[in-house]
Amino acid sequence: MTDDREEFTAAPVMTAAATARTMAAAAMTGAWGGLIGAITTWLVVAAYEEFPENSGITPGINVDTLGPDALNAQLAGCLVAILLSGLLCFIVTAIQKPEPYDWNLLREGITLVEKPPPRSAKWEQEHSPEFLATARAWISYHGTTTSIFLILIWPLICLPWGVFPPSLFSLWASLALVWGFFGAFIIIALPIYENWDTFVAVASCTPLQHKKVPTKDSTSASDPQPRAQDKDNAA
Image (tube, rainbow, N blue to C red; front, side):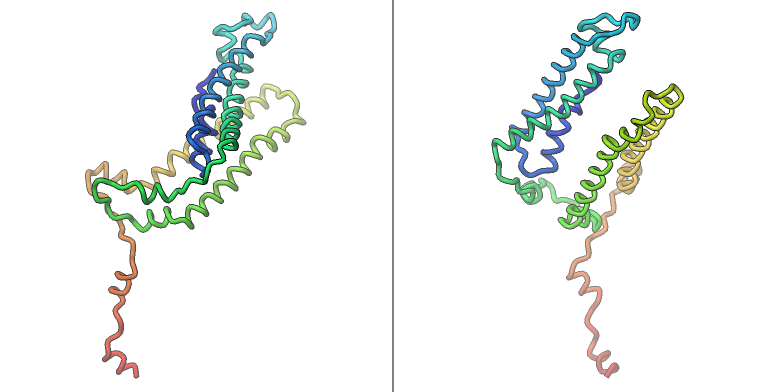
């Protein structure tokens, strides 16, 4: 089976990071259950799958039925890894019924040994509750709509085509490759762009300059009250 370490941990990690009710028992049960179920399904499908006589694949559990020449066993294992891990995580969470975790404990309870550097205005903005709530809503909306399009709408559109001829299948594979490379470029290039100042500071061995967040005191100091003489002149 292809590397499925991400598949059987995707749902537990996602729920633990995005929800406030997923506890350690639910996440670990989902991860281990997904792993065991994926390997079992992979082996069972490979053992009982039938192949044409001219395929050159010997039935049973062997390198041919478990390798890239027999994709059904790999597909079944990956699906079980994703779905079973999420299902187990949900069941254990429903049984435990834990209290929602207070995320402020991470912000207030973890302290640094050394005095932290001054935080930039951009950092304060991106870690504010309002900004995080907006970002979560944006991610949830676009993630849901994109998943629905790729999982349901896109395959349904292609159903009238039937079995793809070689030329159409090549086009389909090319679109998948372009999609993958485009996604890889985005997830690699955007973090580098957003943290370009840090990369430059590390490469040039110079301290990273932080822009201090303007406060009420600094604002009032920079904008002093008008002098009495100015008031008299204005009068």
